[in-house]
Amino acid sequence: MKKLGNYLLLSGLSSILCQGQVTMDRSLVLSGADSTDRQIIGISDATVPGDALNAATARAASFRAADATGTVNAWQVATTPEFTTAPTPGTELVVRVQGTNTGPVTMDLFGAGTFPVVKGAGFPLDSGDVQPGLMAVLLFDGAAFQLTNALRSSRRPCPSGFIEVSDQFCIEPGQRDTLDFRYAAIACGNVNASVCTWGEWHLACDRATQLGLTDIIGDWEWTNSSASSDMYVRVVGLSSCTVMGVGLSIGGDPLHFRCCYRR
Image (cartoon, rainbow, N blue to C red):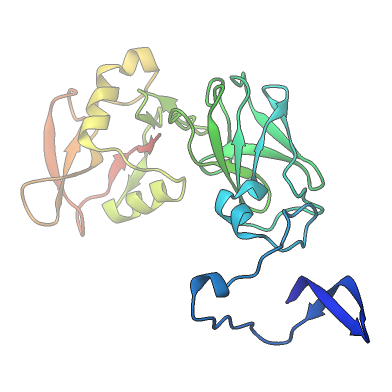
């Protein structure tokens, strides 16, 4: 630990005031009887990386807060002190936004490089996610800065092979081949989805023509909703959008199914 201080050198009747640094190989213990005696004073504000932080700077956290200049989609941010290398994962910055974004955003962090600003699990910002005056709280994940306080929560897009049914979920347009319920659940999990609940399936069935769904009526399909008996789940789709039955989840007949993706 290095501390900057003033030292008075005495030589006979003359004195010289000088400054220097002291390297300490152990903790410095402040043991004064009064709190005013247990402090280090004279540490100026940090200006370059590696400078010691005085109490005022640490409390204000000004070393990690800055205004976003540049354009609404290409921010330029300079902290004091500036970064000299890419930040370590977990670094948090607070950036004051100057304008409403109209699409994905990048941030040029002076001294460190340019990084995308994302939300959730790496999704780019949508138009209007940040607006003037927002104090954007950004957390570095090693590759991008994740925005942790977007003004609104945007829905995830439907993945390839799924059709949007509502703001809440997407569905596969066609049936999957018959499987035991347990293996159907695994198959949907493998594509980051799950077997459709009865409510999801019913809503999609009512809009089948509009959505372009196939084989929605004519065979029993598994749902991810329980029935009134142990080990049984609700099955749907034999003859209409409202006809329901029950199927044994373990040891029963394999049935068709389709996966739903929650947004």
